[in-house]
Image (cartoon, rainbow, N blue to C red; front, side, top):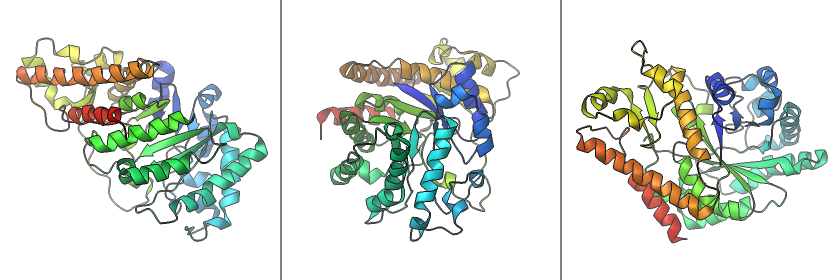
Length: 388
């Protein structure tokens, strides 16, 4: 399985991690955060390994650097809406395909819309606005074999069998499309997914797409990306900040709201499958003689534990450590389906055992740094194994 960097703010850290640390397999470039001319300045080999997400999620918004791209709906037409999108659908598709092809990205992503509530003609809208005009342009260029369809999966679509089957019937109904860029919307405020039903539904969606011969890349993943490997995901993602590890439409929304206070810095433990808030490190060091074994050795971890290190969420070492460790975990997932399941189950069991050992030593964590997500992950794997 591969890992892509979900880029956003401070995407230089992603590129540095990929190029200098060898962490991951490519970038998913974010036009909200990177001007069009800067995209063309990326190293050609880096672009060949990477994917460009056009980010049509909120078609009427011009967030960040989107106004530097000719294909963006709100650039082509002021106050564009669902009702009049057909007026620019073909031109937008042609320009978007041309930008991705001319830039030399590995895939051509067919974009998708975000809806707070899905309209009754949801699939008709996606097909008319995006799938048909993009496929027509790709056919004209003879590049349909590089197409990847974007879809945002609502929690109900993952959990409810009827809605899940409806989505899968639509996704598998385009013979020319070679892959799916899956995004599972997560409306929970928790930093880790704690819904076995939602995760099991996600696994079932990935499984069906995989069995239909489609390449599956899951975007906006947290650590639960390791679970997705069990169902046959070809690639998962990870990002610097939390809004890149869990999809929320507000990232693309233009608002007058003031930025929130930054989060407390965290350090990733691959052994525990958790980001641990740095404030717990003193207790770990004082109460657990071999505490350092819970954090995989990287040069970035060494930097964090230098006496002069100033803990702050804007320090790149935090994230580059995670990318190195997590990408190694992703690469270690076996190719064989049954072996994958055993491997991931063992990771979850070992992480639970690790938290139990720390609690026995007298170290306790809050719900965002503990292992409370792990029983849900075990149950998700059990539900997936049990079938429909």
